[in-house]
Length: 120
Image 1 (cartoon, rainbow, N blue to C red):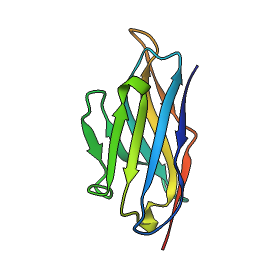
Image 2: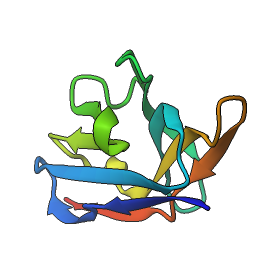
Image 3: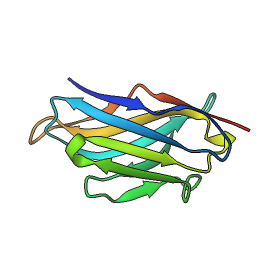
Image 4: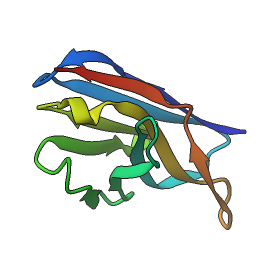
């Protein structure tokens, strides 16, 4: 069984910062790409940022220059440092990972979500 456990969400004023963490655990052979997505009420889930096992990153235009994704491969953990937060960043943030369960097979896994609320 593989699971992703997120932490670090909360309530912050506009202009503030938060750091999200997501750790993969269970029967893991390795982890390929990891990423963060978010979903605001009444809106579809959208990509925030992704990072490959080699460290290549990709960001949504709306967060470029404010958010930084990083990972610790030894700990199978991905982070999202969020600076200069805006009220429009308010959403439920989900961690996602492509987890290798053996040499051949991988499984795409979602975390349970962590709430980020930015007050104006």
